[in-house]
Length: 333
Ligand code: AHM
Ligand code: MG
Image (tube, rainbow, N blue to C red; front, side, top):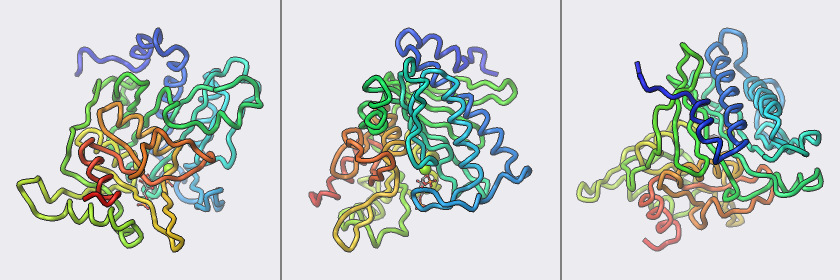
C-alpha cells in the first residue's frame, strides 16, 4: 500500500492555478479512461468485440469498440463545458459544438481506441489525446481551430489499457503517470517528471514494410542489428503494433519507435500514423521527457496540418537514437 498515494483529481487541483480549465479537460479524459477500461475488460463477454460492418473515411473497417469509445469521449468532453471542437479518428469531420463556443476554450483531438487490431486478441490498446486552445472566437474560426500544429498543444497524453490502466500526460511541465487502482476507481500518481534515457537499446518497427522504406531507413535498421558490442549493438527488437504500448515502453526504457513512410512509385513518401491525434501528442510527451520526434526530415511539432486526418512518417524516442536515425534518413551516415 502506497501511504502517500496522490489521486489524479488532487494532483490536478494543485496544478489548476497554472493550467486553469485544462484541469477539467484532463479530469474528464480520466473519466472516459475508466469507462473504456471497464468496457474493454468485459468486451468479449458482452459481444462488444468485432466489426460494425462500416468503413471509415480512411478506408478502415470500423470496430464496435471504436464507435462506442468515440461516443464516450464526445460525451465526457462535451460535459466538461470547456471544449468546443473535437477531431477524432472515428469522425470524418471535426465536431464543432457551437453552443459551447462562448465558454469553450479548447480543441481536443483524439484516437479513442488506438491499436485496435489488438482488440480481438486481448492485446494492449490505448486512448491518445491532444489539447489545443481555440485560436479565434466564433464558429467561423472552427475550421482553422481544428488544424493546428503540434507546437500549439497545451496538453497531451494517453490512457493505456494493459495489465493495469495508466494515464500518462503532459501539460508542458514534465510527464506524469497515474495508475488506475480499480479497488477505489481512482488514478493514483505512480511516476512524476519521467525522463527518457538519452540512448536506449530497443528498436520498434513493423519490419514487414522494409521493402517500401527509403534506403536510409533500411540501412539504419541494418546498423542496429549488426553485432558490435563496443557500440551497444545489436539492439533488441520489440513491436506490439499498438502505438501507445510501443511509445510507453520507449518513453520509460528509451530506444526508438518508428513508423517510417512508404515510398510510392512516384517517389513520394506517405506515413500511416495520424499527425493530430497520434504523432503530435506522442511528440509533445517524448520531448517533455527529453527525447525527440521527427519525420526524419522535420520536427513533428513544427508541421502545420493540411487536413484533420493528415498522416506522417514518425521516428520517436531517445534523443541520440532519433538523431542517428535522422542522419541515416538524410544519407549522412
Ligand atoms: P489504428 O489507429 O487504426 O489502430 O492504427 C494505428 C496503429 C498504431 O497503434 C500502431 O503503431 C500501428 O497502427 C500499427 O500498424 P501496423 O499494423 O501496420 O504495424
Ligand atoms: Mg489510431
